[in-house]
Image (tube, rainbow, N blue to C red):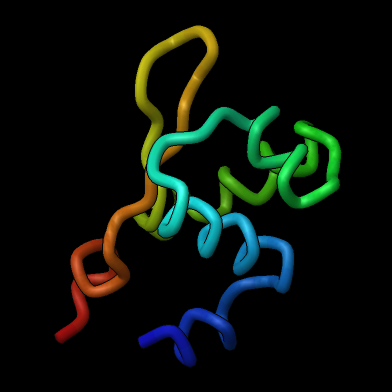
Length: 77
């Protein structure tokens, strides 16, 4: 399954998704700090992941992001 995601996601989106799979719930600032990118870059990638149903938001301020299992979100397997 991860091989499929690597082909359809950008390298940056793959990193964000991988981090959320390991780290649980994180803010854009926390993700950015761990990946050494600016939070606005994280938001761009998270929007793509949300569009695919791989990530969802929790709360309002600060917004936290959490990943779903690829099979659950893409409706595969």
